[in-house]
Image (cartoon, rainbow, N blue to C red; front, side, top):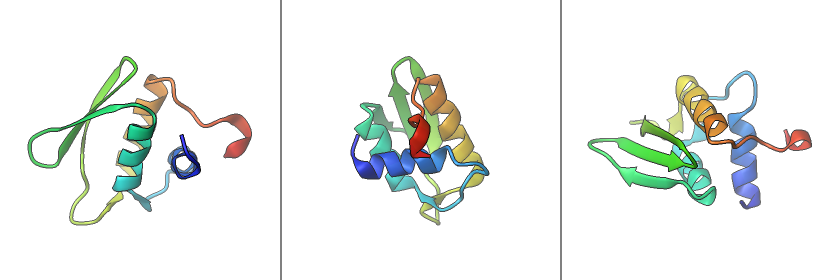
Length: 89
């Protein structure tokens, strides 16, 4: 995981949930963590990481993920056993 991935991961876990995280940065983080991303129908993206699985819809027309999307990604990452390291938040 590079420094950009760590920055995105920390942003996902910030409270209150942020609304200005580009979806592309989230996809890059997931790929960097070794997740398997596959295209679904329409704007769907299926993600599998460790034993966790989820389907997300790419935001459009905006490129940023909304607050509920960020919370869903956070929940998915926690299910997959991924959280930011203690002091980097």
